[in-house]
Length: 418
Image (cartoon, rainbow, N blue to C red; front, side, top):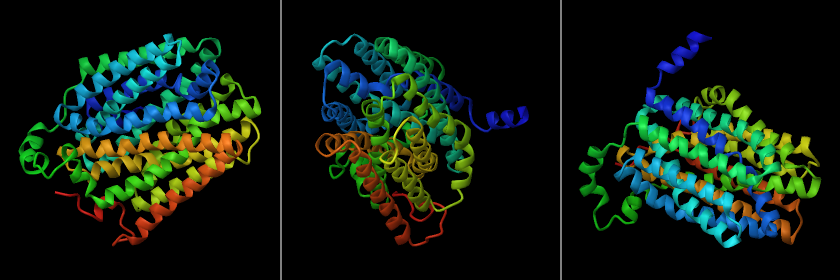
């Protein structure tokens, strides 16, 4: 066992492991509060579920706009500076949320958080792609997800008990973790952005008058990548409904308290920690688009099954089903994005990829909130099932129309744009 750990440790550079452990710290702190935001906002400000979802959507839409800027910043300024700035500012906003006593202040702080969070997400994915060669990226991204989800396993379990006593201290725990990770990056991590490559290509590709959105026209013309991004957005909308709306649905309709609900996201995280590396080793052997279709089907069934459940144990089973989809989908999609992106444009490609995350969180819960408020609470989950099945259909259509249907990855079917 020890020899296997040593081999794994030696397979990746030291800087990768700094990111690995820093992500664990950050995820532990931030997940102490995020699963319970909908409950906190609804109870503190006496808001209907649609209004709560709209505040989260505002955060995501600001993040969506910021993602465009984040890609250019990460490519031109650097991965490290963007990540440190993002973590430092979101740390301050989390501390501010622990003190906010009015809805306008809360909304303003959430807006700042949404504006700066994409810098970290885009930066860490791009830095990993810089550090790890293409054949090893699926396993590397799987390890990063294991770190992230180990934190998510620890955080909600602690956060559920802390939030039951004081939400303010849960916010402060998230703030401290993000601040410590920012300091760790500042002191121990070197810049990895290929500035020279970007400089050599900037006159030819990025700064021409025809190239708009700071080089994004290049990405937006990549129809294979944009088709993937659209289908992945639908999958994200489906999964976001489970994560953002299940806590308040379980409490309002079945009386599941925060300290009990915390074990549901923790189960998700434990599954990722224990199973992600092995699942990725299996899925990397198959056609990327078919893998994404199968994973999205697990999302759809997991979310839809909440409508058939009636209590904590049933909701736990729904999370387990959806988590299988997460194990299949997320490292595959991140690797596909890294492989399709030219090195000097990885930040922009990762920016669009992370934009799908913001769209999913922004649109999915609002649709669910509208279904809850205007039809019935259970309609949330049938709506999520429908959206998830549309994502499956999108990936199946792309896979079926690929020139080489049995190819292991889209990156081997189409050559990335020059």
